[in-house]
Length: 449
Image (cartoon, rainbow, N blue to C red; front, side, top):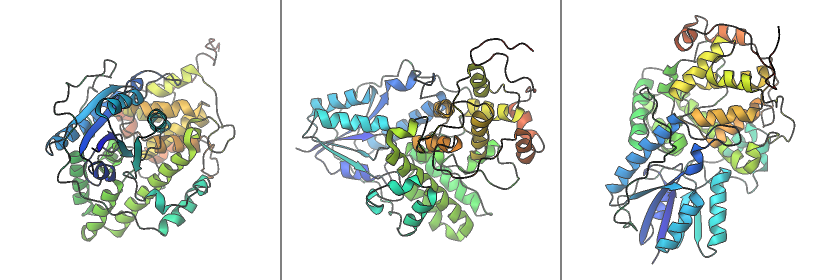
């Protein structure tokens, strides 16, 4: 008897899910999502990986997926613990013959698969390209070309067609468990944010958001953000407002509630109602996201190292506790930085432009180790994606692939350009006033003036 364990990670949907389609070719199917107990404990950067906004979005996404599976007479087993140990116990208990998952790029998830291979040599482990436009076999055997910059990948992509999305299965094999034990709420999980979330997790929520955006795009060109992080726009109009959230798909893409292929196909199919420039915006954004996905897979653990892909000393590398805390909590001498960081804490979201501004400040003005800034984003961003987040921070610290010349960080010029009226600063940081940056030095000794 073929018993398959489907390990759900960043693929929390039924539609256009090659991993699920493969897992369904089985006599018995066990669908498992594991909440890693280590997510809620501070790590080497003194902050936990899973903050309140991302945790709430994940819970909503899992709730919806659980209902969708139940409608097909399947069950979602929601486990809590160390994933490699949890999955190993399930393999033994249910005599699992095959483990299926979407392709992993994070080093922690890849370590789980390595652990299972070592423990169960006869176990079949299959990964599928569920979260990208292209399959791994559409790229060259070696991914070395990705280390240059985006241009070589763009040339390769121009010679390929994105994979066509596939429909959700009408039925699924019977579950290994007829009754699922009551869900165990992680004791360390953060409480829900006090405000109504900007984004609601789940596959249906993603479809509603996409349909609403397409309806608005029919009235004119609409920018779409698909990665949450990107090169900021060159126009002088303000794109700092939370209204930008109406045009972003990054939370659902990052959690896999919406597939990149389905998003592109849906936008293209609405061409009579959308401008060509809008379709191109979406495709170029997805290509940028795709590039960073494959780049992260190529980099492995180098993704998290201070010297980055470039293997050179970053522009900044100090750890100044006071400066770090002021940046995190929005109490720096610069009202624009404070407004951005307070919006991030309250909503779990920042526009791509705002992320670029505060990251530039962190590295080039505060002279701090870029990895601490990346870890803070990981903690708070509702659309956190390991590939996008860490590769972008490497670029800002000049240890990644970006070859753009270093520009001096001018916060006053940036404020005038993107928040000329001061509306954004007044909304998010009305009490913010300029003052000294440091009251103590990096060793916490008081600074006398």
